[in-house]
Image (cartoon, rainbow over all chains, first blue to last red; front, side, top):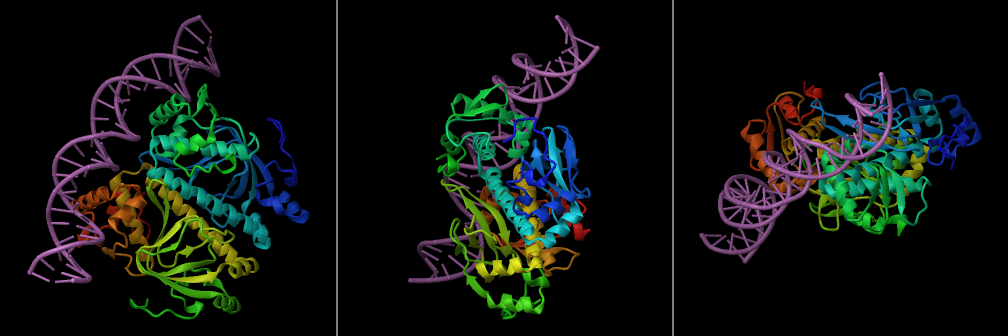
Length: 247
Length: 247
DNA sequence: CGGAATCCTTGACCCAGATCAAGTGTAAGA
DNA sequence: TCTTACACTTGATCTGGGTCAAGGATTCCG
């Protein structure tokens, strides 16, 4: 892993997100073709990257930073429908328009590919199409798991679910070992958490305090979270308590 | 459209669900290959087609009848995460296990393909892979739209959203014209509706009564629904009221 | 240093929807 | 015809989370 403040590699084969990216299994010729249509874009925290309905002329992956996919009703109610962490893919090959607002939650760098040539490359390269299907199925699974959270879980369970997802993602990206207490900085404001969980920011704040009081999490400042016992957190989330990699 | 009680065509090219199925754009040789790995299965209302976690050795489409994808927590809370209507695809190419319980809500007939040979055919036939990606993206869009329903809509809006989705689907399958009042039979019990919407069956019942009292829908018996004004229903659902094909 | 803007916390109160509890069709079976 | 069962409705009451409101803690800026 690179240190924070890393410089971005100009070569796709060294791309920091290569391990989950579309180009993970490409040979050198394919990588060269990807290089030709690749470029980086960066956005500041709070910037809207794409508006729902806008023509979207690229696909890509998040290199660093966090973005959210959100839907908004006319009266302003908003629901976050996806969370884009480093290495996540953005874009809908074969679709012209964006279906959601994509908003940078932190400063963010994205590795983009021009859409048309990317689609051509995809058509000509079965394993890229295959990889995209795989990633889309993953997203579908995540979306459906979230439907259970939104439809049937209590506020406390929702918070615990969110924390365990963020913690797990963080761990799988290697910033944490897979044992011992888990430590991370929440990449979301209380309001963003509320929009993800279908709650109000006040309820999020109250439940965070309650989980803290009950020793499920520790909080330093507003964002720095320590989870002394991942199994406990997952019980609170109402999940099967096998704990995955955390035992 | 065939009459109810239709006989099932033995040829994929005449498959009643061909218009949305994977084989929609196949040439005759590919259709022949699909024929070789195709078979039909039928299930009775209430039967579980696949249990979450089970090995799933086929993919396929719904020919007639309705099935649901559901997730259940240990304490019995359940959330429906997908509704399979005729022509919908089931299965996760490249995945061994089922991620959800698939339950027949009515008697149902499915057009199945053995998974392994289907995957091989998919790898060899780019436009099938392409079609699958397209369908998966559609499902992802639907799942995310449902996240907004679950997270941010009121009970009344949820019911209206469900009715408008079922009505729209019904219309697109040609059982209704695209203008005038829309008429259909609800394929779900009040309890199933509740599980889809993250509500209790009592709340579903109450809101159905309220929508009826307010003239948004008409009800004959418990299941037969008439929607005199689709635009009105969509307003009640809190959607952008352009109304799509319904003007 | 003193605003003032963000983001967060906490309290008091309220209400939409859950829960608990009777019923009301309607259809199948004896 | 009665009876059991299932799907649904409706009423009464309760409560989790929403709403409204008042601060507190940082950070930025003059």
